Image (cartoon, rainbow over all chains, first blue to last red):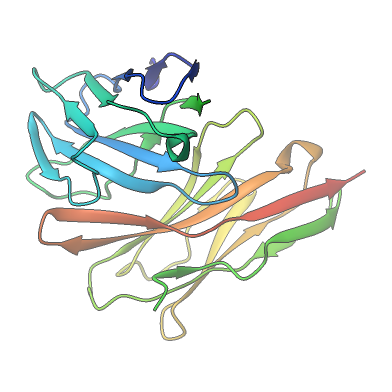
Amino acid sequence: EAGVVQSPRYKIIEKKQPVAFWCNPISGHNTLYWYLQNLGQGPELLIRYENEEAVDDSQLPKDRFSAERLKGVDSTLKIQPAELGDSAVYLCASSFLAGGMGTDTQYFGPGTRLTVL
Amino acid sequence: AQKITQTQPGMFVQEKEAVTLDCTYDTSDPSYGLFWYKQPSSGEMIFLIYQGSYDQQNATEGRYSLNFQKARKSANLVISASQLGDSAMYFCAMRERNTGGFKTIFGAGTRLFVKA
């Protein structure tokens, strides 16, 4: 069974440029997460989707970050414009919750390492 | 207050010996879950083990076991018979309920070095 797929793996851009990351979750997983991981720290949630609905986007900086999961499967996270402080690893994870019940064990993709110059 | 605390920034262990990585947590949700993940230098977070707050037995998965002490709010990971490939960052995480459903919070991690 294929795991969580993310692309690109690495991205280098100049500040003020836009950037987009793509994630395809494990087949059948209805919940999708985007996390930000700074060097030497644990992941921090940016946004969580249950199917197409963003159920928790409280930590997403909405002035420059946006995300979508139009058909309840794959998702795109965008930053426009990027700032120097956005340099980090962006992780996507997915899980399966049935009626809001379950362990919510999350399986992660390899991440996208973003460098903003 | 920190929700998840991992007090050991780095740990060394001799190959083939056991090692314990510490984790304490804080929550008012009676139905929570605890996870451990491994993150090698390649960057991918690998799920290792899960413990539910109502589970009576400590969780085990191969060489990994979770020493769950509910009253102390402690969820230490024990790795038996360490291997060189166990060298990585290890993250403790807690799932609790919030207004949006579930939320999972990660600790700052412990870097484990396995010596030959």
